[in-house]
Amino acid sequence: MSKLDRSRFVEQFAGIYEHSPWVAERTLEREALPTFLMSAGRDPAGEIRSVDEARALARAFAETLAAASEDEKLALVRAHPDLVGQAARDGNLTDESTSEQASAGLDRCSADELARFKVANTAYHERFGFPFVMAVRGADRQTILTAFEQRLANDTATELRTALIEIDRIAQLRLEAFVVS
Image (tube, rainbow, N blue to C red; front, side):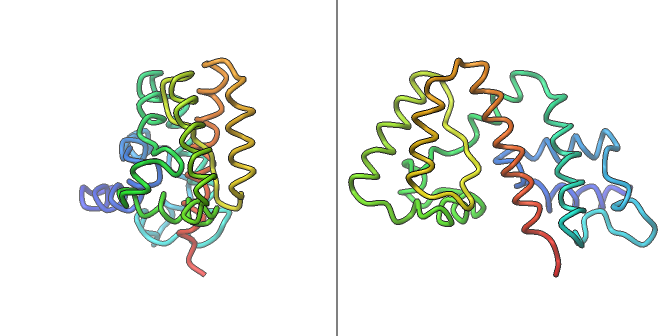
């Protein structure tokens, strides 16, 4: 792959993992791209043509994340914003996070819900030392608040694994959004 292709690939897929373009870079370096992207006439930084293709690329990215160091995984989790947190209120989320939180109605919380999210975010940070991460697309506010409460009972190792599973799910959903119809 040429340098230009590498640059275009990383540019296109840098936002799949929140503030962590290294996942796309390392997947490319590992030569772990799905074969459909490397077939004749395909531009690896080009279109994803089906949900199956998006899911294959998501698996390749997830394998890269799984092979990362524990410090890199923790940094990735910490790169995620709080749900309905200060960054959201200030308009400082990535476009992807803004869309995902809005899809769950998190941009339309009542004052009571905002207070509940603030308490949940604080308790979660105090317990685990990183933000609560959940693939919220298609969820509603009550489901998310319930998940907060349930996951606060986890130990740190379990919760870190859960956060990473959720992050891979977010990445898959983001890649599925790239599908050209």
